[in-house]
Each structure stands twice: as structure tokens, then as C-alpha cells.
Amino acid sequence: MKLENKVAIVTGSTSGMGRATAVLFAREGARVVVTGRNEERAKAVVDKIRAEGKEAFYVLGDAADLNFCKEIVDKTIEAYGTVDILVNNAGMLSMSPFRM
Ligand SMILES: NC(=O)c1ccc[n+]([C@@H]2O[C@H](COP(=O)([O-])OP(=O)(O)OC[C@H]3O[C@@H](n4cnc5c(N)ncnc54)[C@H](OP(=O)(O)O)[C@@H]3O)[C@@H](O)[C@H]2O)c1
Image 1 (cartoon, rainbow, N blue to C red):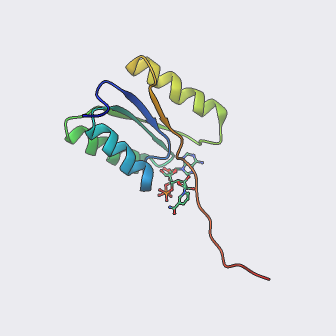
Image 2: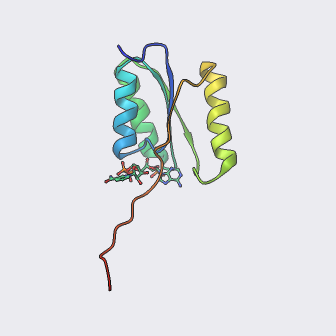
């Protein structure tokens, strides 16, 4: 396993690429901190990781709020003692037709 004993924060991991990253990192041995705003989806990701025998927990909040960002790091250090990897993925992509 490539990430054994590593601690990874993956922001925006309640869906999409962040979710896939969180699940993959856990499979590779990392303890993973899942973040986002939607509790149902956050819990589903953590449940999936734990069902595979790996470790994870979630922290809910708005990534645009600096206090929430500090809370993620504080809770990670409290639970796992360190942060080895940060995947700063939270965000949204908005597409619209080009107009002249
Ligand atoms: N998909 C693409 O083609 C593409 C291309 C270029 C860049 N990106 C970037 O790659 C990242 C992931 O894309 P994706 O397609 O996998 O997106 P996605 O499925 O919509 O997932 C976005 C994630 O970010 C979280 N999130 C969004 N705004 C947040 C906020 N204000 N506070 C906390 N969490 C927030 C969402 O969590 P909640 O819903 O739980 O809040 C969700 O977990 C995004 O930053 C996107 O801009 C995507």
C-alpha cells in the first residue's frame, strides 16, 4: 500500500473526484478526513471507507470559511496527530454557453 500510516485531508470529498480520491487513499492505507457541507453524503463516504476496514471521519462546513479550514486541521491533529497530505479539492465548476 502506497499511503500506509499517512493522514490525508481531502476537501470536497462528499462527491465526485474528492470522493473517489478519499476512497482510493483509504484503500492505499491512509487515514482519511472527509469534508463537505452535505452530512448524508459525508456519512456515506465514511461508511464506505469503514466498511472496507479503513479509517475515516468527516468534518462538515463551508470551505470558504477560514475558521472551518482551521477546524478541519485541528480535528485531524486531535484524531490522528498529524497531517501528511492535503487535497484541496472543494469547489464548484460552473459552465455556461459563450455569448457575443
Ligand atoms: N469535473 C470537472 O470537469 C472539473 C474540471 C476542472 C476543475 N474541477 C474542480 O475539481 C473539483 C471537484 O470537481 P467535481 O466535479 O468532483 O465536483 P463535485 O462532484 O461537484 O464535488 C464538489 C465537492 O466540493 C464540495 N464543496 C463545494 N463547495 C463547497 C464549499 N463551499 N464548502 C465545502 N465543500 C464544498 C462538495 O461538497 P458538499 O456538496 O457536501 O458541500 C463536493 O464534495 C472542484 O473544485 C472543481 O471546480 C472539476
